[in-house]
Image (cartoon, rainbow, N blue to C red; front, top):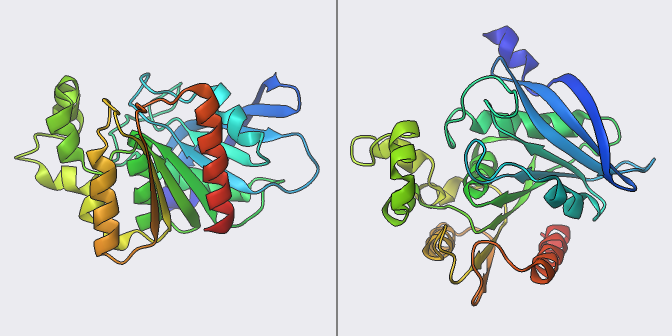
Length: 264
């Protein structure tokens, strides 16, 4: 077990992929996490200068919400070395994803890996978490060294609320996390509102007011929990916007996130 822990966050393989756009390179990276070979995308501008790191925490589970290369390109174009873990069991990675349980270590070890790569600055890593990825990003802020500011967009902050809101997800949640009454501890462990006082990063909350996938109540509950814990946070609610924003506004919101990263 000690040998496995010592390998965590170390590189197994880098597989170059075709450049998604001119001047941006893309690789599929395999790395160690809890004795498993797991995978993620690395996307960065072509440059000789060391780049600041950024980790994108995807939403969904398994094939739903899988990392989109186009999303990583929009982030890398802003001058960042971007890593996006797939989480275990996906795209040929070993193990089985468990929605913020043991698979959270795939994010933590991805953060360690990114900081160790040549051409990437070894500095605190900003995290951008979308949907379920918000839960992952905030878990990292609570438990993982080397995390910088955290932006959460359309983020899950209370998994018990998700169980109530998303009837279509109840079967998956019962299978992967457990029953909310019998396994309430597992739900609370995945709910940032329950441990906001342990979040070590400043937090930016982005949410659409008519989000039907993750209701805006998640944003309000997270803001309230952070405020009560005396934590630094900023909340931007976008009126009339759903889970996914129109493209032009999406870019403007990303601009605001990166501006906040630079000042947080």
